[in-house]
Structures are given as C-alpha cells and as structure tokens.
Image (cartoon, rainbow, N blue to C red; front, side, top):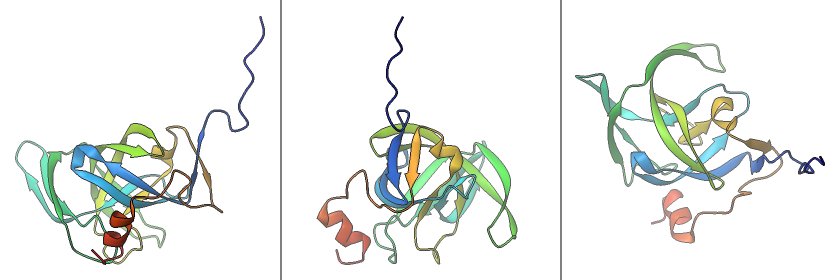
Length: 160
C-alpha cells in the first residue's frame, strides 16, 4: 500500500509572527495578535476584572491597539487559575478562560490568561499551547493569513 505524500510543512498552517484573529465566543470579531513561541500560554488584555459567584468572571477588553475605543464586556466561566512567570521573571496569578479562536482559517479552543496588557504592543499574545493546534510560525513574515478589512485596520490604529 502506497503512502500519501507529505506536504512540505506536514499539513501545518504557516502563520507570521503577527496575524489577525477572532474570538467569536467572546464577542471579538477582530484582534491583532502576536504569535509567541517563547510563551507557553496565551494572554488577552483584560481590565475591570470582577470575579462572580459560581466560578465566573466579568471583564472588559479593548480590542484595538493604542486606543480604548469599542470596549467589549465579557462574562464567562473561569477555567483555571495559574501562576504565570513573565519574561522579566515576575510571577502573577491569573485567571484562565477557554476561548474559541479563529486564526488563519483554523477554529480551535484555547486556554487564555487574563492580564492587563495596556502597555504592550499587542492586546493578545498567542502562545505555544494554542499554536500546537497545527501552526508553524515564520518569524520573518506577517499576516500570512491576510489582513483585516481596511476599516478594521484603521480602527485598530485609532483612526475610526
């Protein structure tokens, strides 16, 4: 019996170091993300975090970089709580939620920690655990899956 030929990248989706993604279950249709193979977990910019009864959490997200326009308020179940060590060595306990993510045409569930990323260049970081869902990251490329519509890109730059 003959074997099927393997694709050059083993069937993995090639993505750039930055891409446009969606978190449809959280009500975020567009968010520019940084793919970071050096980070184990994914992190989403969250503020006004409020723990609710029944192991739930409410928080808000600014989906656009460098602006607080179009904030989205989300309420969902807490999946876990974890101690995360930043690249600078500081540890912090964070709430973890499950989020359906669409990235480069693939839809998958990812564990996402909630953290204030106001001072960071990207409102979301996609780490290794999420990238194990069939991605190969080309650090020399960006937006391999295409760009968001022009209107979305302008809003992301604060020029709505």
